[in-house]
Image (tube, rainbow, N blue to C red; front, side, top):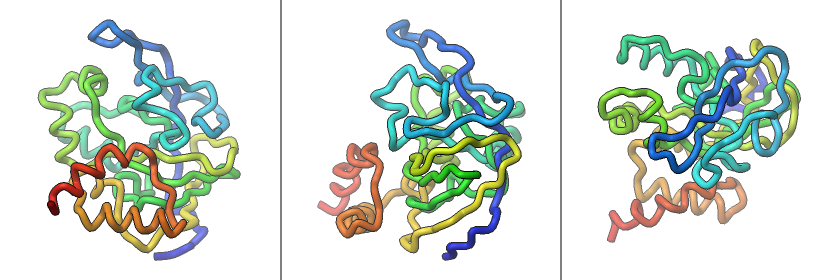
Length: 220
C-alpha cells in the first residue's frame, strides 16, 4: 500500500451538534443531531470545535474525536431505506466522498489541510442511533451491512471546510479494516493488532479492549 500524498477524496460537509435531545429513556441527552455548518471549523484533540457528546463514556474522547461517514455508504442506505441520508443524519462529523471510511485500514492517516487524522475504530450502533433512525431492527441491519464509517483521532490540529481534499498519507500493511473488525473480527485479527501495538507500530483505540476477550475466547 502507498504513502501517496495525492488527494483521494474530499469533504462534502462538516457537521456538529445542532441541539441536544433528551433520550427516549429520559435519563440523559444525546448530541446525535448533527448538521452541516458553513465555513472552516477547527479540528482539535477532542473533535470538531463546538461539538458535544451527551454520553461521553461511550462516545467522544481522543480515540473517537471525529466520526466520518462516506457518501458512497450513505447512498447505499438511501437505496435500502428509500429516504435521503442527509449529512449529519448518522451523527457524523465529516461526510466524505472518494475516500474509504468503512473499509479504511486501522491506522490509516488522512491529511485535510493542516489537520492530520488517524483511523481508529468503527462506529458501534446503539439504542440512541436506532431511536433516531426509527427503522425496524436498525442496530442489527446496520451491523450486518458492515458500513459502519470510522472514528478518527486528531494527531495534528487544523481548520477544515467543505470542499477540502482528503489526502491519504499512510496506509498500514496489516490490512485489517474498521469494517472487518466491526462485522467479522477473528482471533488472528486481535493477535495481529495486539502485536502491532506492542511493537509500537499502532496505537489502538481503548474501545477495542472490551471486545478482545470475547473474540479471543473463540480459540479456547
